[in-house]
Image (cartoon, helix red, strand yellow):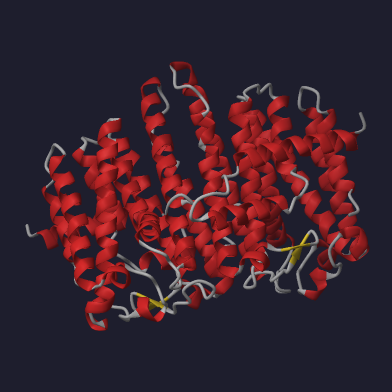
Length: 303
Length: 303
């Protein structure tokens, strides 16, 4: 089976898991459930749940009832951040992946509440991981790992992770001083949730502290490569290929790797981060073939 | 010691716990921590943490390192809902308790992110409850109770609780059909988080299922009494006493107990709910003196 076919299969499987864990659209407040479904169904590559699941399998995880709620939860968190990012007071985007953004369809108040709902429901969903288990003596270690996994997602999505990155992004209007501050923002805005994906897969499969550290490092480099590649595509691609307007960084006076270092140097940085991510991945034991292909696909993407 | 003095003491103690668990204001994204502190410091009666702690003690709870993170977390969730409620797309309020609202001080984008940050950090904070414990065989039951407590707060603050109530509130513009729908909204908007406060206190202290059910019922009646009293005060009080403009329900075309039943009948409903809450409380074993006084204080309030 080709990598592309396999990826579509895995994304479809992730899609079904996410939808299984979304709330039913019912009751007096069904509009909010409807908005949550709409936001999630706007799509995406389901990259984070796939990364989580593949890492879980790599470390020998075999309890689908434990990992599935976390796969759904991380996609809810990723989606809530997009819904709030698109709001008029933030990026003020009317379209996402060619469809009207959530607040354009449901109104601004519901857009705010739908984002809140997805974030809150992500934590409710993670807790289904323990509800899915029958309470007995031998689940104590799994309980411990579930709480560690929740803690990772909490920290990586909050002010020390993704949300912190968004704060910096709001403040990034041409006045960013240099690479240290930019790296801090990229690490938080983009890498943190990828780190959470892989770390949670490893933690729930029972990986040891050293392995979890390695996995975090790999995902961090993947995130940096991914983000620098984004900076490059914003000046080298075209709207049809990218599916969104190019040149938006310049328009919004954003500091990027390209504005800091120029295009050629930015490309060298992208390669440095990519190489680190891939070589880290290859050092892990087990069959990393699919993950390697996924990394290459993400880093080489020209869309 | 008078009840008022005791209440101030307990509110101050709760205040200190909440502040202990707030993040330090530091790092590249210190503005968001600053906004979180500002929103929390805008004050309030710290009613939810106090209710939680008193219920915990009533059922014999004695591990302050387990209950404290939840006391801080529920106040963060209550505060995030106020921050988002005040946003221009929601109630568009410039002042809360006489101080500029969070988005008026930090801008609308930071207002959205500060609310998100408080919600996310609430879950991070709850998880400190298990981090505070040394991992050993005898903490298994506490782990289980911590996860149940997190689940309660997740559900009661989300679309089936407080957030669902806010959704209904946004939609409540004079077209609400009757008592069933209004009760559903009040139960979610106001009672749910009070239920969570008392239920979590009971769960973490090891109360049994029947006791948790009773406590939920008591808090539900307290919440309804509290909310109907709010409806009444909006027409009978004055701005100086209430600390906010009166008549806002009529101005915003809100359906309330007063618009549905008239003032006298609304007062009878408030008394019915109050009586139920108090008689339920008196049926619990243990010393409920302070809780009874607190209930009476909350229900009789004319501010």
